Length: 64
Image (tube, rainbow, N blue to C red; front, side, top):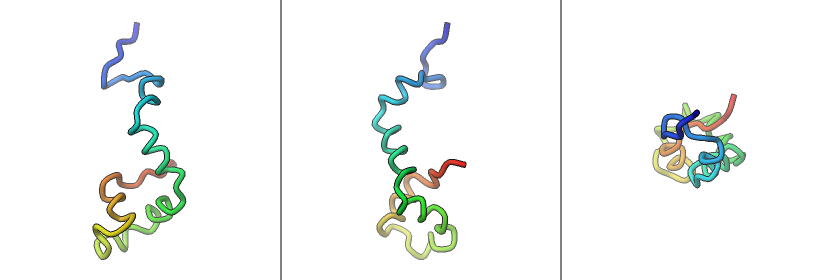
């Protein structure tokens, strides 16, 4: 028997979360994934502007 805890959530519970879908949507956003690809050199120069603000909150969400 698997107990549903925050350390071992079920797939169904995870996919019901707004945070899951927000993160998933970010992975599909080409503007954001392009930003993730080039942000290392520009992050400090543009800190707090536009999509950089989102990047500072969520980081690199690209899948390998």
